[in-house]
Length: 277
Image: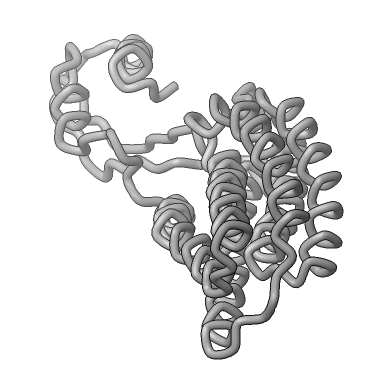
């Protein structure tokens, strides 16, 4: 038993691998420099990069699982693993953001000295790495919730690099020590609403809600409008994973109708009008 549905994430797995290699390599550089320079904003950015590495790894593992064939025990295969990975990425992002905000609060009461030059150099390189990773993942993020989770993490890091650069410039020119925790807190706050949105979409799919962009009543009316269809009831529309919408329902047809032809007509209409195949 198998499906011919390729997941949206699988089409972009090569980009995901390249972004993972870039992110993992630079994360080590940023973490070491942040520790040596005593910079929370740099460590915050490295912390987001750590979740990127974990998130990108989860995304790749999920894509691999989703490509495994369906079985009699799992008739839809392992497509939902991608959604679980997106949800796990959201939980990771929440944890890191909370830790950054906690540390920033502590540093506001007693701001330490921060080495501005290493902070500036590494943050600038990090900005270039994050821009490259975000560009690699952008197209896939439009199709796959799994990749969107990875993209949001990289986008958060991009902002973190900008914040680190700004904090470094302020420290270098004015010596104002509050710049480091202030911009670190900004990174933590920026990612929270996007994280909640990602988690909500993942939970909606796991609860088999009607996918966004599809109008339940419009689909019911379109099915009823197919020749020889009398009524439609017990209709369910849900996402198995990003880009794979499923539909089931009970269709009553007129007496003497060619039931197989009605089924073919329904399939054609649903695919052409609503991209439900």
